[in-house]
Structures are given as C-alpha cells and as structure tokens.
Length: 516
Image (cartoon, rainbow, N blue to C red):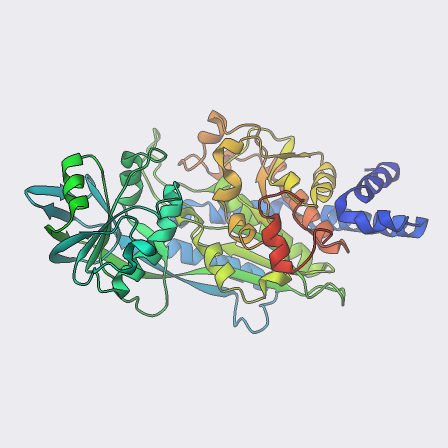
C-alpha cells in the first residue's frame, strides 16, 4: 500500500468512532503523521515477521491423524495443550503474574444418561428418552405422593406443602416462553423446592418453539458441564415430561397420586481440561493495565462415523487448528514486538461441548473483566471465498476501520456475517465475553453463505490440511495479527456501537457513559 493510500485510510479512521477524540480536537499535521507512522510500523512488522512455514507447521501438528481430532476428553487433547504451552515458552510469551502457569484448569462433569428410567403414575408407565428426560438427578428409586404447583416458583409455592412429595409443575415461570430460558430457571426452581423438602421435581414441557423430538435427541446423550474440583453434592431428581399423553398430564395436574421414579445406569465422570494462557506486557504506562485477548478454541470433535473413504478422524484443520495457529502467530509476533496494551493469548478447551472453557474463564478470570478492553476471538467452519474475511460482529463495535485496514493490507476485504440466521455470534466463545459487556467479535475465514462448500468440511473427516489453501490462510493470519496490533495500539478504547444488544452490558462493566 503506497503512502497516499495509507494517508487516505488514516483520514477514514479519523472520521470513525474509534478516533472520535482526534476529530473533535481538530488534529494537527503531526497528529496525522503519528497515526500514519504507527499504522505503517505495524504493517511492516507483520509483513516481515509472519511466516507461512510456521503457520503450516502449527496446523500440520494440531490437525494430524495422531491427535485423533482433539476430542474432549482425550489424551490427544492434553497433548495439544502441552504443544500450545511449549510454543508459548519458545516464543518468549510470559505467564500471567500470579496465575501460576500457562494452563488454567477447567473442571468438568461428563454426565452419561440413564440406561433405564421409568416414571409411573396410576396405571401408566413413562420411559426415559421417549416420554421424559433428565435435567438433574442420580441413580435410585423413589416413591412419593404428588402435588401440583403451577409454575413451581414464587407465589405458587410460598404456602404450598411440598415436603416429602414429588412436585409437579409446568416448565418455566408462567411468563417466559423460551425453552432456553426455562433451562436457565430450572436450577433455581429445583433448589428452592429442595429447600422446602421436596423429593423430586417433574416439569411438564409445553413448547412449539422446540419440538420434543429435538429435545430428546439433544438431552438423552452424554453431556459435558462445568463442574468443580471438589465433589458435587447430590440433588433431588428433576425431569421434564412430554405432554404426549393428555390423560397422564390430567392426572399429574390433579395431584394427590402416588408416583414412582426409577433411574438406573447414570454415570458422572469428573474431568480436568485446560485453557492455555500466555501474557505479554504492554509498553504504554497509561494503557498497559488494559488487555486485548487473542483467542481460539483448540478442541474438535474427535473420532466419528467413517466417511466414504473410511476416514473416521475428524482432524479439524479449519475448525479450529487454523484459528489456533493464528493466535500462536499473534503471540510470537507480539512477544517480539509488544503493543501498547497488554496481550493475553488464550486457547480454549471445550468449545465443541458448549463453549465451556471460555465460560469457565469469564467466571474465574485472573484479571478483572473491566480491564479486558477487547476479546478478539477466532472460530471457523470453513471458507468459500478467498478474497474476504468474514468478521462475525464487524459492524457491532468501534474497531471496524481497523479490521478493514488490516484485511486490505493483505489484499482482502472484511465483511459482516452474511448468515445471521445461523446465530453464529452467539454460538462461539466470544459470546461469553459479550454477555459480560466486553466487545468481542469472531474473526472467521471468508464465507458468503453457510452453503454446501462449508458443510463439505464442517465437522467432517475431510477437514484436513491437505484440503486447505495455505496462501489464503497466511493472508488471513496476517490480517488477524495486524488488526489486533492496530486495536492494541489505538489510544481510543474499543467499545460496542450504540444500540447493540450488548451495549448496556458494556456500559455497566466499564462504568462509562455512551461516549466511552
């Protein structure tokens, strides 16, 4: 990019919110020149230091057959974590002071469903995975009278005698209609009823939003959940019941029957996995207490059903060895050429099991969340256009100009999510930060639609390095590193654009007004 083009880019940046203060103060020629020089310096650093051979070596190792798809839990995922740690050491990336090492333990419960379960009332027997699913519980047999509690919450149970009874209620609180929200309420409902002496909770599921058949497919298989280092105390059984048999529901709502619940074959396995974290201190005395996170998940789906070639190893080159390689590339680059803000390089575990590593981090962050200025996350399903980078959330924060400049520097364009119907922003690790208020997009390989070219490789055995365009991937990694450097060196702190659904959470986190 020649000097005139770069100068025009700087003028464009000055017109955007990320450089609002420079515009408001009528910048002088030295100010413009300083911005230009900083941008040119970062471009030159990236162009002269990022190597395709090194990027390829990371992808080659992480997506090799020997790592067997990096499933969780697996010995191979632990090998991957050790590789990431070793690379951090080799690059000269530090551990975060007071953190104790490069690995953050993430404690998980791998809960396997019952092999047999029945719920009996009067002359009716309902079976696990057909008429009911487990929300929480242990193996055992239980017989107790039933009592109907409407929503099972608040005023509906305030004066209700539930001691030593099986409490029947509808899912949710009687107001919220989202099954996802009902799941969020389930724990509080169960704990409140258990505190009043209930023996079990049976919720009647009534929703047209999520069919019962879909629910049973998702919730009758092994589930990975965040746990604790210590043993988790048992809780009373909690099930969701289908409304398929209206006569059974009528009996349940009537109450005052004896019901029997029998659960056998449930297994809960405790697992320790790891987020891998590296740190580089910033150079600016006023900005180094703020952090830019560069992140990607390094787990994948492991070994699965063989494809037409009888390949059963789901290597996960695109998803997400490329993303992991990009973060390692940023770590190497910034360790040698630190930015004004401090940097955290984090590789997440458990993304494929429900964004678990990032969920654990935001609740156990070794640095205050309000000191995290930006989470620059990577996740990938694939690509179908090698002229672009698709940034999920590009237009949602004030750093869009930096994204555009970084991509343009390597012959690429940055575009916003073209497949919003997929809900991708809320399906990757970035969302756990966004919910807390931290600006957090996902920097993805270029796609114009979530089409057959994407599905050809997404969670498929063919997603290996042999099918990857390394020239394009190298440009993509360079654009990621440069965008991060521009954000980290900008005196303006990134923020959500006004009107975004996470804008208010950001204001609350940073205790700032809309001018940021």
